[in-house]
Image (cartoon, rainbow, N blue to C red):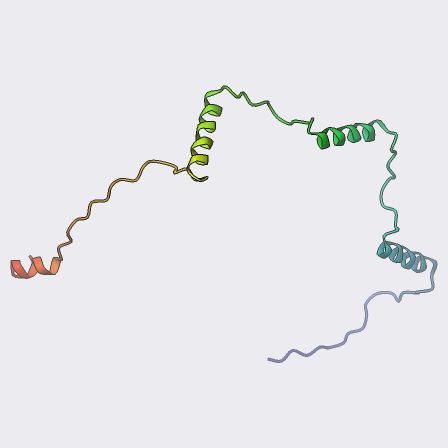
Length: 123
């Protein structure tokens, strides 16, 4: 089945491109394309919030801002993690995880067909 493009009449009221509203909308679109359009409420750089945000940004840049609870370095978990990291460093960066693998025992596989032939067929 072949698709055919059919032109339809434009719905709605015709637009007067010379109206004040359409001229203003065209100007706003041009400013937005350039990046000059204003959006939202302007920021007051002297407000308490902006000063607080600037202080937080400075602390974050200097490494003074820490989030969360401090790490207790002498806890059992941190000692265990340090031992694992040392083991990984000694082992080339890899630590085997989980239970050690069990030694594999190879068993001889006896075919069922041979057993059936020896017994004289299927029982």
